[in-house]
Structures are given as C-alpha cells and as structure tokens.
Length: 350
Image (cartoon, rainbow, N blue to C red; front, side, top):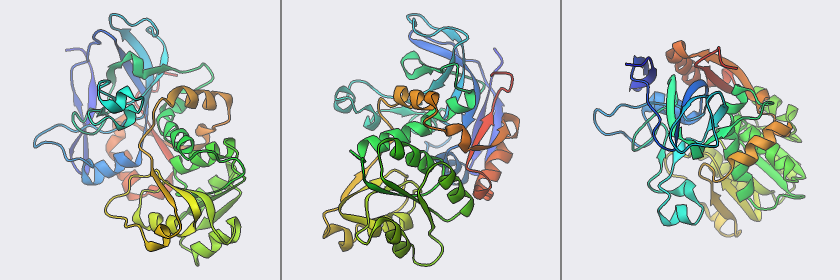
C-alpha cells in the first residue's frame, strides 16, 4: 500500500489520523500532495457537533475543504496541468447534468459532491488527494501555498459581492469580521462601496477590519448597535448589508439596519430559524441568500495575485497536521485567538 494518511472525525470532539491507501488518478483527474488546508467555521461546527448533514450510520467523516498543494501525477486526458504545478482546489464536484449545472449555476447543484459533507464526506485533511483536473487551478508564482488555501473562502466573498449587484457609491454594513467578512469588506471596496462598516463582538477583529480598509467599526456587544451603525451610515440605514457570521442574532440585526428597498445578503450558514420581521416586510427589503461560489476561482486568484485582495494578512495561526486534534480543540475552545488558521500538512512544499 502506498503511504498516505487522512484525518477522520471518529466522533464529535475527536479527530484521528489514520493510514490509508494513496489514491491513483483516473482519466481527467490529478493526484495532489496536500501542503496547506484552511480551517473553516463549518469544519469547527463539524468537529463540535458533527456535519450539518448527518452521515449514514458508520460512515467515515473527513473535514476540511480549503486545500492547496502540488500536483504529483496526472491521469489520462489531462493536458492543462503537470507534475510539479502548485495548485488550489475547488472542492465541490457538480453533476454537470441537472438544470442548475446546465444553466451555469453549478453551486446549487442538488447532486454536488462537496468535500467534508454529504454524500461522501471526503475531507481535505489528508496527505494525498485525487480531484478532477477541471476543478484544480494553478497558482501564480506570486502566490504562496498559504494564499492558495484561502482562494476557497475568498471566492465566497467574491461571489457574494457579485450577487449584491452594483455597490458603486453605496453604504455597506458587514456583520461578522471573521475571515469571510473581512474579505467581503475588501472586495466591496474594490466594487466601489462609498462607506464600509464592520460589526463584530471582538475588538481584535474590528482592529483588523480597520487596518484592511473599513471606514468604521461597531462592537455589537456595546450599547445600542442599531443606533451606532445608523450614526455612521445614516438614519435610514445601509444600502447593502452582508451577514457573514452565520447567527440568528446577526440576521435580526441586519434586518434592522438595512435601508428601505435595500439589499440584505445572507452569506453565513445560519442554524435554526431566523423569521423575517414585519420591520423588513413593510420596507421592500430584498433578502438574498448566497451559497458558496460559481465560476469565481479565476477572478479570485487574480485579485489575490494583484495584491488587491490581501488574504495573507488574515492568516495569524498555523497548526501542524500531526496536531490536528489540538488545532480543532483550540479553534472551538478559543475562537477569538486567531482570525484565520491554516493546517500545515507538508512544510517541505513551498
């Protein structure tokens, strides 16, 4: 058996690294030696409580969907990639046959095989990974493998801002100054937003938001956040509000600070029920959900390469692959200790 290993969620709260067979790429596939994997909020939820979609009894569960690495082998019919290429990976494999795929909206494909979730729960925390070559993207020489691991969450931000429509000259409020929220802030600025307000409970993240270009910040745990936000954006509220925290309280807050006929973008994965209040219904607020990304990787890679999207400044913690259990215990037990963490699977790859 060729040497390989993968981190498996034995049960909520316990990750174990297990030996497994190194996969072989088939036609149209590439074998990637994984170097870095970003840690996402959904990974932390999976570690703490299990995946959002429960697996079948006895089904093995992997976590992680933000990998970057180096191609080590290509299958038949692969011409655009070669061994030695530094790459990032788009983790969802759509069916390409449903009406959503055929209309170009493959991110909402009902049959998508997305890493670390149903139906296969194949995680990116592994030494070697096989993936379709069409969903593997070469990294420019200017990009580090750390930055390559952040192309996936950055694509969420790019897709969210694209779906919000024109932001030129508009006021924007971003609820949640985690990695995705901070990237939404940077992309919104590129899209022409006139004023950007970042809102979070952690002062350290708000400091980062200001450093990365937010015009103002509000700690939602202090005073009346609605009044404080409107002091900045105006008494009618913001033109566009992005919810990136994935929490019912921030959904409720967002609906209170979005302007009449404004747009409320729900980017985070919000658990439970978040009812729409009359306050929003009688103001003709457009509520738009955002799910992952679609055809966003090339644009996102170029924005990072150009220096406009400064994702490297978000990475403030690294964990060794061998310490995956400690990484998740830290992420769940002390989430305020970092903005974005990356697991180093192979430190020899640069």
